Length: 375
Image (tube, rainbow, N blue to C red; front, side):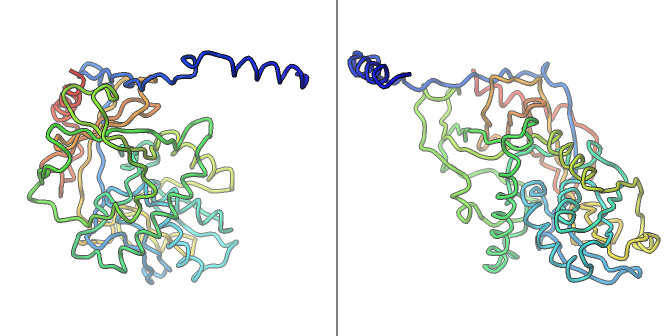
């Protein structure tokens, strides 16, 4: 376009009626189609909760140098890269880059630890009884929650909190590197915190669970939050809503990407079950990174671990829905993932439970509670 044409176009725009330049009022997003007949899958998994927080330490065990890296509660995917960097420091103190090391476990922590070691120059052989999607990490909701059941309040000293914050920020930075990829392993989504009786009403608590530290303020800049919304600005029936923005993991795509990258960089994967630490002695690698999660309870007899059952229901995907929902006080979380609309709810007896039997009635109740928001 010539300069004269540009000037003419600018003059035409300037002469347009003012009404044409007004912005339309905000519209409520599409309502979720939520009903029990749209449930297409129910998945269960175990969160490896540890009151002291993740175990990231080394010892000599069964004739091997062993670096332990497990016990992330509900924060495995979210905190994985930051804590893997801490484990890497211990690996580097015991093996030189170029050496082959063993990583045990193919969940979120095992995969990210293997990739972190590869990127630091190590050859990695990954041993696992099962591989995705037949691992506990596959049942996670996929919301970035680095503070979910990560430790008890009594263990969260100021030094511990500072260390946790550093890991959370480091992990967040790595997650950003996966944005924009075709498979969408990591995406930003808006969401709504929804409440029937205001946001300051006390929340119900399960008597069997411990008190957890409130860590939200330490990473408030990584979780954008908006002001309360007017009724016409959200799709919910008879509820108050506040908008937030947060990372979401499309877990099947994320797992596949990590496995593909691991293989591309020369990683080997061996299917093997470890029953006692003596099984470490049979490995050809001199250094072993133990990322067995809840499996460490039986493998090592680690009594510091408490299993926490989790269950998610997957509904038919709704591409028009691009927002998450946290229904405050009603124990429901819904996430828009590419493989379906994920609906999660904590059960009263999940803390301390290893029962992996799907409870359809529990998921149906959660779906109905979510559905009530849309009238």
